[in-house]
Length: 394
Picture 1 (cartoon, rainbow, N blue to C red):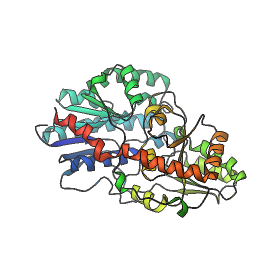
Picture 2 (spheres, rainbow, N blue to C red):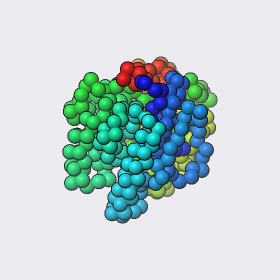
Picture 3 (cartoon, helix red, strand yellow):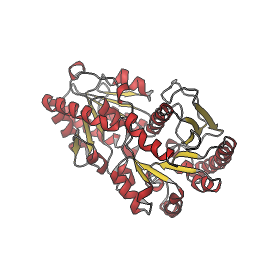
Picture 4 (cartoon, one colour):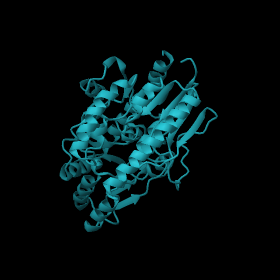
């Protein structure tokens, strides 16, 4: 790089508790430690009740807000589609001017950007104004398959297949995601394989003996595609066999009301504890000591989402948590086999896995150790160099 400044463009909320926010927070802090200056460009948002500082405060970090709040995934079930599409269009217009003006006025040449429906138009704009771009993210039509019509999905897929090649590089989190991108027509030479990573030294550790038995946790967004309703139905089966079992569900999302209704109907109110979305440090320090086993019930989507490594998995590994997850392609790439894989995302299979692992103290200990051993592969202090080496070679 001729200068040592890079812009990060993301539609994630800052401050916020979502996985995208956590992922970009880790990247920002690590780029700064590598000696780079970072310009974060993100949308205006509603004031947060949490003062989440996980994205870092430094003289080497500048934050520019796009002066318009975009529609979010949870809005699709609250507002009319016409209103949402109008709000999306307005955001894209405002974002175009804000991003173009900011990058040109600050003479930025290098951009790291989240590829999403909220940045769908930026590849063309950034190419026109001479930006060199590294992108990351999943395919737009795959991530929105449940929210948009088949006709619109087809149009976006045609557009996406053409514009994705405007990126200089695309960072992926797994080798299977890289293969999927090559099948779409993206050049293999322009793919950076860097797993989602965190500073594993910051993760608090809790001994298994200090945590109550038969306790489980899910944390993340509460959306249909994450399979949290399947987990709840599985826990209902488990609870009949282990009456003192407890499940923590931590996060926000459009199906939270539905999940609470499942709990109420299943008479699980005292055994399922809902916690609103909290900052990562609060999650780690205040809640990781309350449950032994993490369950990631995300079912197979049969699209590019199946190859995306969730940051909650990396955080769980770094905490030495035994993990239960559905058998997706991305889960098979985790070194040391620290995960108990469930063949299908159905309540009975998940319930059986939860019972077996929770009752087997020897396997709990073995999986906890395997998780810690595997976590070193996701240490951002090492992995960030895969990104900075590309930047410095350009």
